[in-house]
Image (cartoon, rainbow, N blue to C red; front, side, top):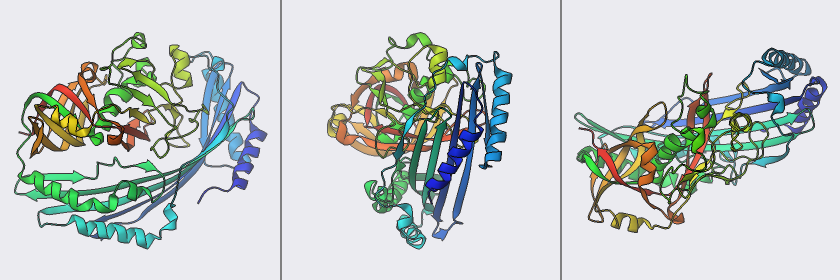
Length: 483
């Protein structure tokens, strides 16, 4: 259940009572409630529920920055956290890579609520479990299906951001992740087909199940898992590749999203998540891809998984082009990174929880649609492979050289879809791969997808990201199979 307005008001009053007299002070309250339901092999798994709540206080004083988190939301608890944050700000003053007092942090005002037509709680728990049981039964279509599962993961999250100088933002998010998989086996061959991986994740309510056709997907997923058992391996060679939206989201995520994070470019992530092949001097001139490549950062898009009105530093979110007509324009850097690099960025300071500080993160990163019909994309390929749904990925520390594998493939020969193939893989180099983009699907081919899991930061922060993309054709790609 949402936190009461009275509770919010009490915390705001307590914060203003204890906020120290410094250059800047903020409180970020976060409450997250989740429920995970799963039926595997027709057996209901233990129902998992969680409820987590706490606050972080950030202090900037004389150029230093400090923060401290607490689950004690009484005035005494907030006072102790503020004292710790202030002490760290004093210790870091004059020793930080940036003078934080010179960074213009906002005092925002506003709110945001996920669009929900049918709430999670409007459907009784027994009915949701019955839905998963029914889906499970429809996945087990053959004795060769040896593992099968259907699940629903719902999260309700509230944030309250308050600044000592009068700023206040409330945001309420509702997330739903429907998942299903079927694994088939024959002898030494095992193949798995999933419901776009975990890609059909969005903000909203139970209406999302109809929008992504969850109730109808099981027989198709089981049939394709069985089909892959008898399919030949994907051929090896240089050819065109048509990537479905549920693979495009991984391609965008790994070889555009992460390389454009300004903290990577600054070297902050070098020890853990790696750096980037992108350098500061590339912005404004570097040809990242062909003229068909248009990438936007858009947290304002309704229903997408990482939509919001303000980031966790209180910056108002707006749609921005990162790459336009193939040219790199802007990076994924929040207020502090922008100040350090002297480059424009976006409102993408995001934290996974109340006990983690915001860092530069992806939110909704979308590839804008082009003009090509899907049938025309197929017809334009003389020799190639159509690939769906990511199953494996590997990319170097600078987010440049990569190798990705998909669950399902189908040959394209002389402009026709022909043989289904298993274990389709491809490899490339980010710095040149996007320049081979030669066709982009029209708006009616675009799918709104995302990922619940994007890890980064020390200590680690796993966060939600959204990606919308049409299918895309890439020329002269190195393709290989599983042999």
